[in-house]
Length: 135
Image (cartoon, rainbow, N blue to C red; front, side, top):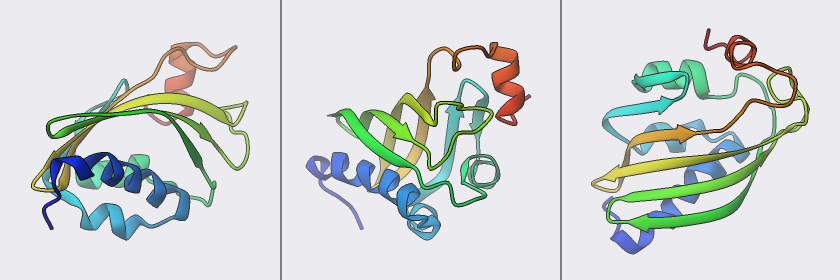
């Protein structure tokens, strides 16, 4: 399915909704060939590494509240506040804010670049990386 450019912001929100509902199949079915994921801890990892690293291994019930969603061509920038179902060592307040640049190709997600700021209060960047499984 190819989406018109005006549809990409809603399409991007659909990926976050898939996290909220545990719909891994939606994400898997809507990734473009050669998908990559980049964050401060991940450098252009592929589909398999993305699912191993980023897909929730437990039912943590995330909620995403969109702060800003903007589109430029085939890219969508999403800034959101996420709320976890329970606090964790990585996110002791059970909340965090991220920004993601999502690039689409032929209506499917081609790449995601995640940007986040300082770790939660009291954690060094090294501790945050270790607790999140990136170090």
